[in-house]
Length: 424
Ligand code: HAM
Image (cartoon, rainbow, N blue to C red; front, side, top):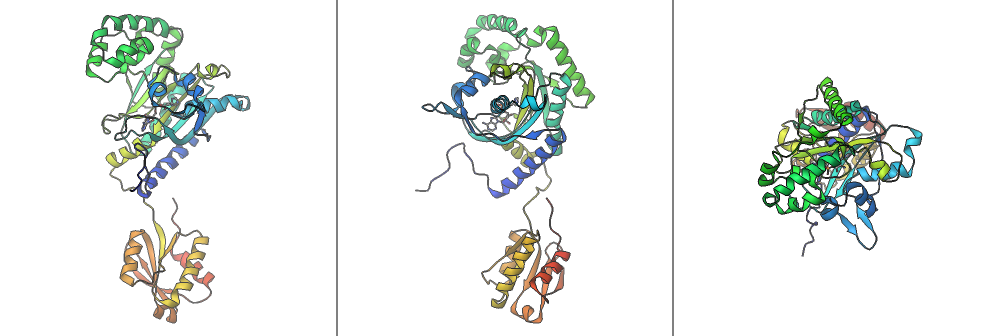
């Protein structure tokens, strides 16, 4: 019996890994343009961290966490809570009042796997801690938009405000009263949520619930003056940066720590999985976790979803793995010197491939094509005796003689002059 990977846990095969690396490199580059610094975190945390931050009555904590019950430890379902834990534990605010941090890595949620939804998935997560200004919200959203733009992806941006501990509780009470009157029409989940997490009913995807909440009171009408001003300033700042957005008063998000601004980058190209990235402000979270009273805002993007969307939306050829040179050693005499030459070329920074099987020219050229070599150096026993190999440009199929005289070092330097290393 063959052993297969666990459902929802996926291998990233080399062709996909190339695309992922490209996305990660772009993300690092852009995040660092915005002054973000990388933080690397463990994938296991104390369960309590997620219960206290994400919230007990959320789907993630209620149903989706991979927890070692006897140890009280959980494989992280997201990165924000861990970043806050590390931020508090190491007193990072003492070094610098505003911290801009990002991390890239695997997250774990026991959801029903489907296209773009996995149990082990990967996030690009960025957080700005210690800044309250609405312009910072806009800057962070602009950073996400810049990444998606530079990857050539078309997505739409929706924003909302979830208010604060001043304006949300009275709104919630009014919403519960509204929902209780319509209890019978709600789905089973929303019947339960009416009392555990009523805001979530607003973004239930079931058509019956959707129709019911269309006339529900809007949190945007209930915002306190401070939240109102903040939300207006976020919109003005986004406009000044030329970022197009739509206000969606029904966007609630599935994690409890959000306050004020929330946002999602959406696509209709991934079936049911519409969110490519999402985030928001969490002004009370750090204090709630025992840290200083600092606010924060962040987002996370799903690497799997970005990669899928690139496959679907972008007709540009993907940056592929390529070799600079393939050494076709065709005779017994040539194997040892060609092996030595390949080693020296690699030391000098070239991507060099070689086939030691002694197969014929046709098979070796085919292999050179498979590894995507830009050049092939053909050296048979005859060529070796005459000290003159053939250098073939694989794209143009042009061939030129190549002088095999001198020491291996001299040969490799001459080759380096003709075949510059790829930079990517
Ligand atoms: P989230 O909305 O739960 O937010 O996830 C963010 C993104 O992660 C989603 O938009 C999606 O692209 C990806 N994602 C989530 N679950 C899965 C899954 N099962 N399979 C594949 N991709 C998935 C958060 O995690 C927050 N921590 C974001 C944040 C950061 N808010 C503030 N700072």
